[in-house]
Length: 536
Image 1: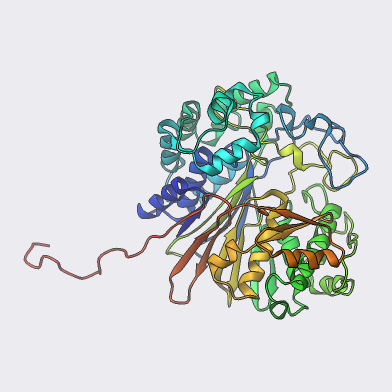
Image 2 (image 1 turned 90 degrees about the horizontal axis):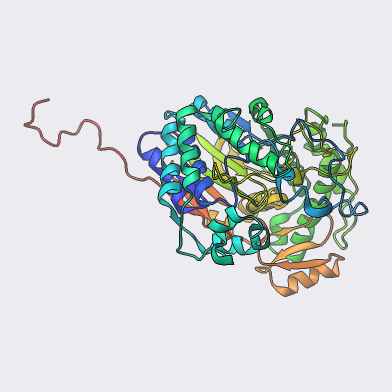
């Protein structure tokens, strides 16, 4: 079973399974295809978390996150609103758009390492669908067109990226064939030379020369010096189920487990999905988690993250005592440092391997310019650091970005029960948390859970999707929440459910171009002689 956020990527991944590859081969082929046909979300010049369950049942998270370049420093940007701690944008949007916003990418390092661990095909093999898509082109979807419209003002400032996604000054029309011949050449070079072509080789040299010419600080030495880190996941329990998620520098594992522990003390099912009482409980859990995230979750090589305390049942008991069912409240952090736009796919093979992988170039279209010679769109990952010095997530050279990526596997009685993830920036881990609650507490089907309306807050207004009735939003407002109605929270979720009879089901939601593809049937029954008179 394969679920990605574009039909061409799902087809690329499914082809690897059909040709005898593993879930890892399928996942990497799907991600590489997504770098072409979902270019506003992911690319070789991005970063992410590749969560894999091996055939032996062990879980490993391959951390391919981006890091700050060697020349980066804590005061390289000026905060736009120094008085508002929730705003980390810099003056002139320097950390959001343009060459100075580019961090050192790590996606390709993680994907190559995954293939070496449990793949059957080479990097060159799994690159073929992506090369074909880049050279021959793919049809723009309404989703791609809408994303181009959203970022249009910035895209128009760069002739290279505008020529592809804003032709004639307007968003690329759905059904238009999108071709990136330079990217096809880059992918072919990587197929021949391996990931070193980008990380210290000719592709990297070309990219960093253009970034430097635009005023950026990323160097080819930064690319050559970056490395993937294999990490043990964070694990927690919720009503008899086990959840397995990425550890820091991802905020997902720590804070999803923290919020589930918090909810475990309440009758969530009795409150009913989407009731004002249930949404108030989730909103308060999100506010609590984001307060702790801001205080103490960062790259563990720089900040000792208190994982044990944050994920403990005792800490949840302590925080639960502070909850007021009638009113919202301010949630200060309960820990201190030292105490310790994106894509996703979910893949499972017949031998027990599972991949849940979330990778990105950060914002829509990353830094919002095209490297003409290579056809690559750089990330704008520097936007995820806090431009204020002295904080857990302040900028430091070589520091990994902190993200909300939540590639999650849920186990029941030690066996895979569900796997899911999604894009969506800061809204990712809150959305994954809500999907787990929908499946476990509310007994939703997989399709219902990925499509169910969501909320989100990090301490300010509560974003409430339009799928919730107005009277529920009004009831939340009566509890003191500032309500902001939004068309969607987070991006398209990709999920797989593992059924008791050994079958699987896949689901994707309306928030992206998600497409499940399953392989059913199989080989002819062993021992059957279809032509009994034929010589053996």
